[in-house]
Image (cartoon, rainbow, N blue to C red):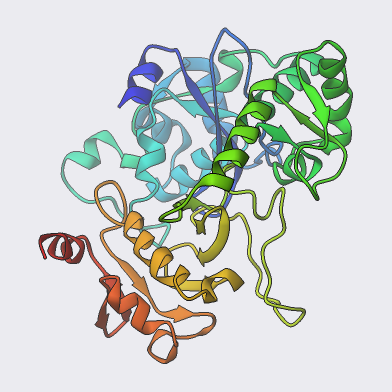
Length: 365
């Protein structure tokens, strides 16, 4: 709601920066008219879409300015599905954006599989598909691209704020054009100016570590508190791509041995559960498959990690979580099946199912 309000006021805008499949992609937020944060931390846009409908949409928006979908559809011609695909091609390429965040949320809704599918009769037919709501406009009508030095400076500060301690691996995981070598001169200049510090703050992550002074103080405080802490371990459920998850970026994913070839990635939609900062369980996109990591085999870790899966369902999230496979084998044959059942999963024909109603019932008990 707050983002929608800021978008309507022109305070915040979003821009696509590359597709991650048919209905997913990277986006970046920036402040129009202020610091141009558009390129920060995002892979450079995809190749410029070329097609008759792409050109028709560009021409219409260039001539008429911000427009609703029905005007764009009339200018481009053709079935809704094909016009929508062309429109979103331009979005992910960073050429077109919208004044609200509603189309991004609507991408999670199921879409027709056939490009010739007709829209449902009723109100949506008049207003257009939900993933085309709001007004669309060309990026060039908004803010200009900053100079290279300004862009690198803003990028360095954003990454330092994002990670606290910035290392080569974290920069590489962001997919930034030029990589760590392109950012290093700016980091060195910031260090010489006394705005950041360079040192060996985290063991095993190389000598080229840069950090904000406040981040170093927090690291020391966390280290001292960790040495004194007793009681229940801290459990966190994070998106795999969250900067708070160091695995796959600053740290390699834990492996069970040389024979462990299961690919783990900081993929959109995937999640990871950490117990006291150690990755113990990886949840693939959609939740159908779980992969346990070495620390999961501890006597009490599994009982701590699995209940955190409740965080994947509920208001604003999926209505249920269905686990079909664990470590590559059917969940019915997995030695971890009992742990999931104890955490509130119930057996179903698709696998083990976790629903919000089950969670509520467990809370009443």
